[in-house]
Every structure is written in structure tokens, then in C-alpha cells.
Length: 88
Image (cartoon, rainbow, N blue to C red; front, side, top):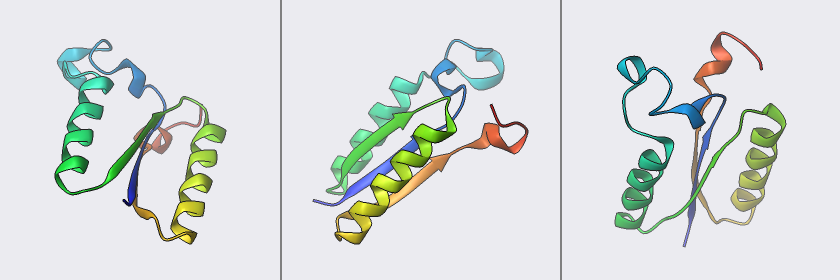
């Protein structure tokens, strides 16, 4: 079974609690459940991660690269929007 990586960057651990009027009431756990269900419907495994640290995100990207080299990566989604205005 091929794997999909979903990597979430800084502050996404605050979804649902940080300014819900702006960012919504869904938590990151809610997003993970939605992604898990979507992957299951399409026959993929899911690796879902969040970090406030760039190095951790890079480590997961490298891990995904190893899966790609082995032919077992379906894709990688990187939600790093916070890095468009700052590097934490």
C-alpha cells in the first residue's frame, strides 16, 4: 500500500482554539480524521504530522523521499503557509 504524507507547519496545532472566528472551529485532529478517511477510500496509508520546527518537517520530507525511492510513496502535502511571512 502506498503512503501519503501530510505535513503541517507552525501553529497548526492551535487550530480550533486560536481565533476560531478567523481560522474555524475544526481542530488539527479533525483534519487528520478527514485525511485518514479520504486515504482509506482510495487505498492509501496516511502519515500525518505537525511541527513548529523546520528541522522536523525536513526530516519527514527526507523520510518521504526514501519511500519515493522505494516506490511506496503516493504523494506529499506540505501545509507550510506560516512560512510565507515568518520563519519561526
